[in-house]
Image (cartoon, helix red, strand yellow):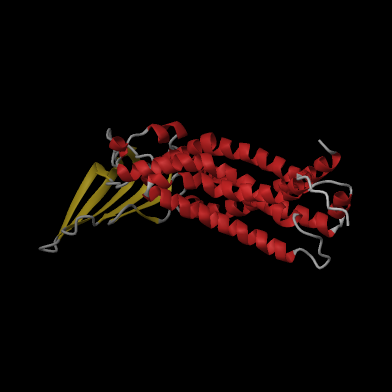
Length: 373
């Protein structure tokens, strides 16, 4: 490897790492806001909060990495042009293709990382994320019973707990149940505990309390003193049904092996397109690298700057990204359009490679000797 290739590649790698960390941090902060309420208002632990936020990040890395690569290639080569370094390298005889090699090497590394994320990491992370969400919903009653405040459990059920003992016992319980409009019930108990029945339904066991019920017809109050009383919470999220898994959390082999009879025509198309997109999306690293390098390395040096080429490269990148979204939607409607999923990243890469190789191809063509004048 040429020393100049190592020199440019070193700058690209450092910039890629810094930009990726910066974009990942920004996305982590924005995504963490989705789960702040779970920790602040519903009592979930910091560990659950961090786990949820970390599990969503691999899914965003597949978007961050190509954009980071494009931005770093664009910035680094523009800096080399502004510092007149590329002028010297071109004068030394280095071709566009040689100068673009560092970007292509970094694109190859990013492509490998993209395939690792798409094929192995993201399906496992998405499945664990959804499973954790499902578990939290199933145990929502335990999470939501916070001390010293009125906790809304579903529709028409409010529970107040004065305090919790170190052993987990509930102290000073008030339950206001208006799930049945004809029978509004209020229960108060000295202490109790949250348990689950055999079928997983949450239930609160109350000890030494009263049960007050107002008749809807006569408006008379019925009062019952009890030593112990058990009341079930109808948690709609805990239905006992098996959680259905979407396309993002299924393995790549499963996406291509599932049949239309198993999941239905709509889900079948979604699974197939998801599988092909996992194989095609890492190719956008090469697409973006070729576009950025071709826009900046082709043409002559302009001492006024390369703003027009920067704008052209950014516009092409946005167009390619929009095309990627479009072909995915089209392929989901009609599986015969699946080849477009691969052509979307390959066509810009091929055009970019042709632009970089064009000067070398012209030089390799023999020129006919001119007739003597």
